[in-house]
Image (cartoon, rainbow, N blue to C red; front, side, top):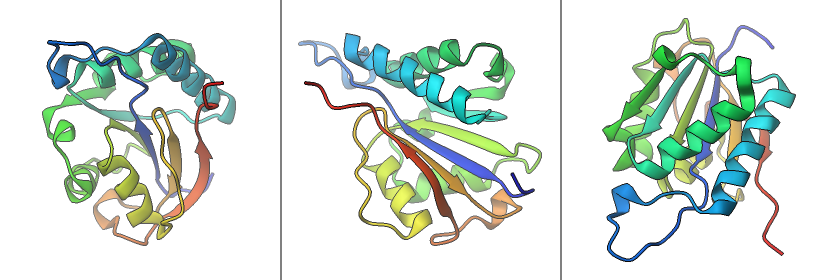
Length: 168
């Protein structure tokens, strides 16, 4: 990889819709846990190792990250490199972009674990691609320039896209 930066945008895995459970506290469904583990294995196989993780503070995003990091094993960043951000929970694409541009340049790869529509909009915005579908647990790998602060709409290249197989 060149000396540019890589942003990995991950939409949380499938959550359960349980009566009486607040949106913030919705857990992952069984399929969501399996898909998130598969996403972690895919990242590991691609040699993608985030230096920093910006994860929404919701239960389903935390559980998604837990499954991804467990599947990545030793390649997962240590707990000190993971930030659970309430800002990601209610974020729009601009909010996510602002959060990314605030990060230190020594983190070559940042992984966001968030929600739609913001995650899908951020991918489309950075890559200029409106044809990308972004189902639950989808991952987009976007190559960017040399500075997080300089990240701007249209400034990225979609390097890879992964999504779990549809349920049969």
